[in-house]
Amino acid sequence: MKLSYKRLGDYIEPIKLRNSELNAKELLGININKYFMTSVANIVGTDLSKYKIVLKDQFACNRMHVGRDYRIPIAISQSQEPFMVSPAYDVFEIKNTKKLLPEYLMMWFSRSEFDRNAWFYTDADVRGGLAWQAFEDMQLPIPHPNKQREIVNEYNTIKNRINLNNQLIQKLEETAQAIYREWFVEGLDLENLPEGWKMGKLSDLIEIKYGKAYSHLEEGDIPLYGSGGLMSKVNKPLYKKPSVLIPRKGTLRNIMFVNHAFWCVDTMFYSIFKDKKVGYYAYYILKQLDFEALNQGSAVPSMTTAFLNDIDVVLPNQKRLNDFNEVLHKLISHKESLENENQKLSELKDLLLSKLATIA
Image (tube, rainbow, N blue to C red):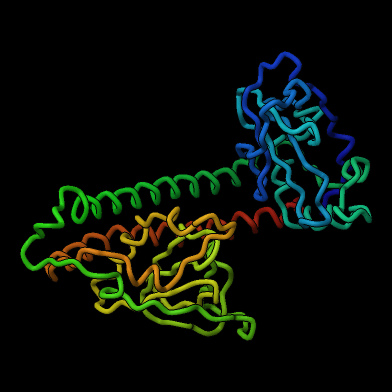
């Protein structure tokens, strides 16, 4: 049997605690994925006593641009220490946490269906604000607290596994970079290279190719990459062999190594390895690039083929490349396995969120 829906406003109340004593020092905002993050706002000379305080298990949200962004930035504090948010944010808490668990409510806020519903109730203003009354009038199913706790525990088990995997992925990446630096950077005398080594250009290792537009492609099982990472899946590969993907615009640091067939968008470069053993080496050369040199005052940094092809590189002998490839292959394969597991876990997490509306 489907649960009857309850009015959100009957379970929450606004909190207007200000930083009048200036006890809170940290100013946070809310990102698009509904987490608190360090604010980039310039607060020099600002009267911080007017900023709102958020305590543990309290929520903050920004209702101003829901119609524009199709999402409502909203987050729950897990911090034991109070922090500040913008005076324009709403801060609220649950009236009775024995009836409605804060983590369960945050799960409901995390649903894409919740964002679509919030967008539906936005006003006609250009910014598409969501009135507080409309926010309170939104409804959700509230099962017995024991059921809520069971759902939260299941959700947290998945989240914790994803977080653990991310920590392992970060450690593997740090290890791979440390091996690269130890083998090819630290203590290397460019004037007196080991026997069989020589100086060259990045173009001696890889050939740079342009990605292509994808609007004509249909949905499929081939990963489609943009500068932010995996975008979707399409029915046709642009290239079927391992490659390094390099953003041409914007987030230049997001260089990716892919070990499978893929398509990448026309704001990306992909690479063809001139020897199948040079892939990981070329990847970590690019990961060490000085991206500030590419900015040159531009608001949108750009990568060029001329810059890439002219990068000075050390060309090790074949044995060194083979050894490096063998060591890195084990690390990267483990890293990719964890990333694939996280993708499946994220899909499971989204499925659990989508089923909240049908839990009896």
